[in-house]
Length: 307
Ligand SMILES: Nc1ncnc2c1ncn2[C@@H]1O[C@H](COP(=O)(O)OP(=O)(O)OP(=O)(O)O)[C@@H](O)[C@H]1O
Image (cartoon, rainbow, N blue to C red):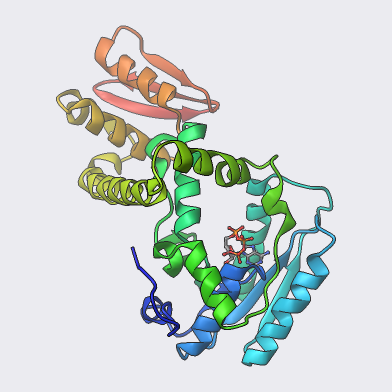
């Protein structure tokens, strides 16, 4: 975790490792505005991508501010717009945005994208995953991930939002406040505005730091464990011999990874447990999954069928 003490740009160091050719997603919010200034300050020439979701009346203003900032900094600006006009869920909005990012990446033949997710986003994502029961799928976000051909960088994950804001204030940067950040319909906003303050007031002032560290440890351990079972889960069918003597945690991980490689991601805990039962009891030959798919037990192997 980076502690920020001086007015010297503290973010430059974290941006050193980014490739020279890079796209950056800039909403106009304080985080991505600081990211944009810092990228340019560290000698990069990012292409600025801004997406209008079409559900807030202030969007034209946001787009104008991002465009003006890009112009002041002498970098290219590209904007896209959603075809939907009704308020969407956060997930649908993100899908639209990423479609736009991917289209521009293809056009520019540049597949590096940097986003301004920070430590508070990380803690909120972690709590969202806990609340939704997505289990160990991610334990927060990675500093670098692949999304198809796109490589996504998140160099701000080690910085707190409060530090980003105070830096932006010292530098007199212009940014926009997203009013939807207050909308209690979104789970993330309720976590930020209600759950985290409650935990801080009732339990520990440093709860965010503890959660950040906890999810950092879990995520890296999960990556390491996953690398250990990569080979076992790669083939079309899964050999029972590789599963039967394995501890429960390893079985679950192999099954989840195997299904993910066969196109079934975000498999539920209950589905994994049904497959485990199928293997252990070996009375039944088939178990239906909740995703229009089934796992069949056949001649010492598991086979996935989709309907
Ligand atoms: N409309 C958008 N256009 C381009 N990039 C975006 C847009 N919205 C978000 N991003 C990128 O995705 C990251 C995460 O999105 P999120 O919704 O958490 O950000 P935000 O709070 O709206 O904006 P900011 O992080 O700039 O304050 C942002 O930091 C930014 O890099």
